[in-house]
Every structure is written in structure tokens, then in C-alpha cells.
Length: 299
Image 1 (cartoon, rainbow, N blue to C red):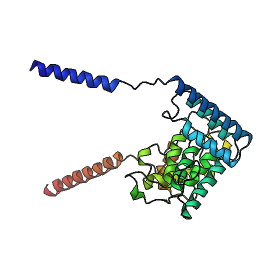
Image 2: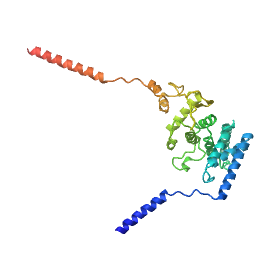
Image 3: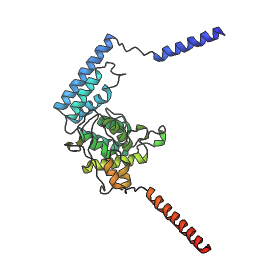
Image 4: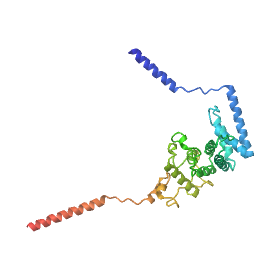
């Protein structure tokens, strides 16, 4: 018995040490030099794209933004600093969001033409859509929000969604929700697990209608400044009652609506205790009156 107990204790200790152990993060000097050289290459790509924002340079810069943050490709922690440089460079190019919107249109055109060949920097048209949305989801600009918000109305699928794992939709509307949740500090829903539900999609579409109407601002993660689609706003805005073209029941479902606005939408609730008191008093008086009346009749 003692042997069994000792063996069990040893097994528990062994499993615990394995669970708590972390793989070594050390890399060889050759790998480090190769990674640093890659960082310099991407920094040059960023500078060239700002200097000459051609389609090809924007494609390369977008590829860098997609790849640079992956630890399995670039194991040095400095990769996040380089990624920030690339993102800032992209955001400084006035047509960055417009360009990736046109890339999305190109992806759909290629798919409709039956062209499933490998596309430079992307892969097939379906992967091209995914990469475009992911890149826009890294860019904290009103232009990116405008394009991603527009995708919320696109529920088309390139491939039969039944070919995918359960719960992984492929439509732009759902991919856009994921990207905006990562991008915004105050999204209408935070639950990425449920982004495929129709009720969440309607909430997102309503949110974007309000943003387009200029009655709702938004904030990016790490930035307290409120924005509209035209740029920084003087103050944070939330829609009032009776937004044109929107059902009131949907308006109440959108998180962030001020409590006083919600109170205005619903009738005042009056306390009901006095109703019971008056009714009970009346019944008591009627009973007393009848008892008095019966006493007189018998007397």
C-alpha cells in the first residue's frame, strides 16, 4: 500500500511540474540575426509605402502587418514594436481603408469569375477576404471603421458554410464583427463566441446606422478620444429617443444607451400599494354597514 501511495504522489508531482514548465524561449544567434534582418526589411517596406503608396507597396505593407506579430515566425519580442511601426505607417496613408475595400471587391469579382487560383500575398479569394478584414481590424482609424461597418450588411458566403466547423461563419458580416470587437473599446457586443447569431448582427447593424447618422461616437482600445466617421469628436455621443427608421425595441437592446433615455422610452410605474389599501377599506366599510343594518332590522 505504501508503495502505491508513494507512486501516486510521485505521479502527481511529475504531472504538476510538466504542467507548470514552459518551453524555452531562447533562440540561436543565427535565428536572432535572421529575425532582426527581417525587421529591418519590414521597416523599409513601411517607409517605402509612405513615400510611394502604390497598390503593390500597400499589399506588401498589409502582408507585414499580418505576419509580423506571429511569434512562431518572428520569435523576438521586438516584433510588436515593429508591428506598431507598420500599423502607424499604414494609418498615415490617406487611402488605406479605401484600398482594402477595393481589395475586398476584387476578391468577390475573382470568386464570381470562378478564379480560385493563388492570388499574390493572399491565397484564394476566400482567404483574401479574411486577410483584408484582419488587416483593417488592426488599423485604429475612422476610415477602417467605416469600411468594416459597411461589411456588416454583407452576409454572402463564398463557400458552403456547412463545409466549415460548427460555429465558424464565413460571411463578411461576421468576420467584421470579430475585427471591430478587437478594434473598439466600446463595441455594441463583446461576445466573440456569439457573433454569428442573427440578433447580434442586427444589434451591430443598428450600431453602425447610428454611427453613420452621427448620433453615436466610438472609441478605440487604449484611446479615450471619441470619434465619428469624419474624425475626432468634441464629446461622446449616444442616440436619443425615436431614431428615424429604427424600431424602439431594437434601440433599447443596444448597450450604451443612457439610463435616462431608456427611462423616457418606458411609461412611469406607479406604486400599487395604495390601490389595495383603498379597496380593503371599502370592503371593510361595506361589511360594517351591513352588520349595522342587520342589527337594526332584528331590533
